[in-house]
Length: 421
Image (cartoon, rainbow, N blue to C red; front, top):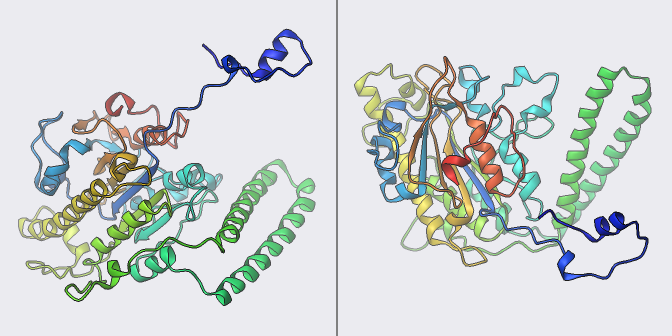
């Protein structure tokens, strides 16, 4: 039966009197969404396809080498083969397209197309938290509605301070002053553009509209910062970054990966944010693991050489082990309603790079855990020529799971609800 509001009822009978609040006419409360939070973990160079994708589909697949550390979580995981972004080409730039499905060069006429999934979610489910989103680690996978790639925080100490340490009164006063100055500048810019608008062509007016949207986005952020200045931050033990008498915490990469994951758990548990991205950095660093003799980037260009693949597997297995530990923590820690965080958090692991050895953007390594999804299987899709199933079809299902009523996102053509819900 369609919802019948008091206003609709009065209009229907042509009445102009106030109707009392009748129980039968009250709109039914909206059903709460199954999940409330979103986390994306992304290794910038992807994962070696030969060690990541299972050979069998369904629930009884054999875990390949890189997924073996996740054995205890297999019922909480959905693994996907042949998901990619149809319009994205190869090269290192494809790593930046993970959460929006489009390349910068293709959005010059409409930069808003670059808006990434996490930032769209920040607008929808992140407005009641101190931080609409947190961008941790490295790798530029977050794009604003204005088409700007957003910075990340890879330093655990600074991340802890931002989350849990209140500024002193002098810093707060200075912040208020800077916010007022920024707001005044935006007022002047907006007034100037309003006077300019009537003299522009339609095409230029459209571009100016995009520019004004970017200004409005900045204004919203300034207001949010102002609103939260005097609200105390949640408290948390600094042992996560300092350790104790028995444990010394290594804050250098890659050993700080577990620390960053712990900070993410604390951020979710304290309701500091509902949206987090965490990127593993690329580069050609020499990982301090036994058996590693070459830089990370050099190993990703293995050309299927067994010796290089063995070394690369050491690094990527470490990533899987740390991700498995993160899922352990999300299962063990409960939210304010007493539910395990994993039950209310959609966790995605993936990269915009499908095969780093060939710089391919096809067949991206994608997994989803938690969020109340019907997990536990490996799903494989058919390829049509160069392209697989649009990854953005999965994003539509994620959005809907998080209570965002949309049926399209970026290059999506449908959703994956038939597999996940």
